[in-house]
Image 1 (tube, helix red, strand yellow):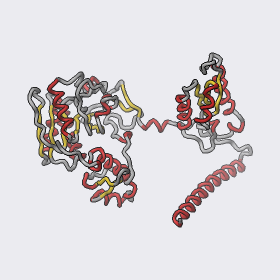
Image 2: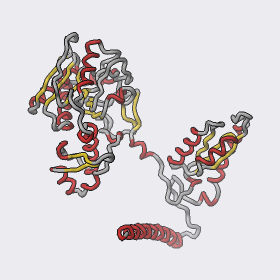
Image 3: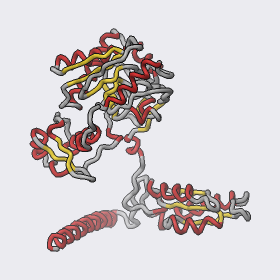
Length: 433
């Protein structure tokens, strides 16, 4: 069995380094593993060379790549939903419907899918010279055979292993990368004994695994794993991400997921995931607003020994940029609230001898909400600008109103200049020290 690679050469580490460098450079420049070296332990950095280093120097980003990390949210968007707040997640039935609506032939889709797999194999495993492609009997196996042909045309050594007959022992060789094209989106249930043995053999090989569409053994519609399943490093899926890529335990086996466009039209899906685009809809605080004009949240909960959930909820409300948070709970829990959540306003609720709130607490909770509304409606608070973006009016009007606006603008500019001056002075002191 092949010896494990050093941590700095492991596929996951190198892939993360590549993604981090791409984000730091802010471009789609093509580069290979040889141009990126992961250095330093336990906090790794990235050392660049070759064309990647030259490009980093050109865009003045060479120093910014040393501590970058790849985020899950930076995956490529689905080919069927470029900028929507809800990214579709397909089931097996929905993928069949999308394929049936395609006006062309199945062979065209298979050719595109196989070429996409080969392209990712060459791009993400640039140093690999030997590939083993394990092919099943369905469309997934056909995608794998197309990928094997394209890899051979690119000058790579390719061993194609047919899963049938299942009662024979399979020789997988000693590849640099193994491509899993055994089962696809149509798989459900538990693999047959012969296929299960082959899956275990793939996992025991020790080579990086690229799965086609889904790791074999994972249910595309549910993410369930009823028996043996391939543990992939990279999954190349087609048209859109599947439910099985995001629901455990399938999500633990898919590795990094890349989506390839094969020419299918998008369809409505029952399931989806919220994308980062939804953050654009979150209202921003006004520079002239205050806590009374930025939303009031009332958190009611807790009992003796059970204070964690209301405390975390109140802290989450503050992190979500709520301006005013009231934390209400039974008397025995309030002293814990005082220690854990300093910023919130505390309101004790009537409780019984066991530290549980009583029916009378309903009225107290309503009063806590009314307190926040009364505070919001105070004259001093209403004069400030809230989320609506309306500026306070100047009572004098005319030229006097214009002078008020200019004074506000000059005051804001002066504050920015003073802040920059303090930062420069602190930097000079640090250099002298």
